[in-house]
Length: 110
Image (cartoon, rainbow, N blue to C red; front, side, top):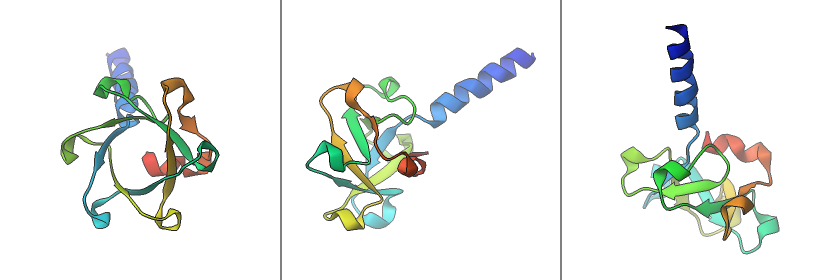
């Protein structure tokens, strides 16, 4: 029975760190304000957009955009200027390119 609870705890911890993202219309609805930078070296996080929800694992920059807020882990709003943002991101072309460059900002997506 203890093994079952340990397994359940481990499984739930994996789900808690998935990155299902919902894009909100207004800044006051957002958990995190995000700015998209032009160059990879300016980013706090390099993000790869995955097609399926089960591919968005842990806090490693693999994001799945969901259609409904209640399905998301985090709600984000894209701001117009870098100084308005909590997090600066750069979209990459391949999943192995994703990840944190500034790990001090990781807490925004937990």
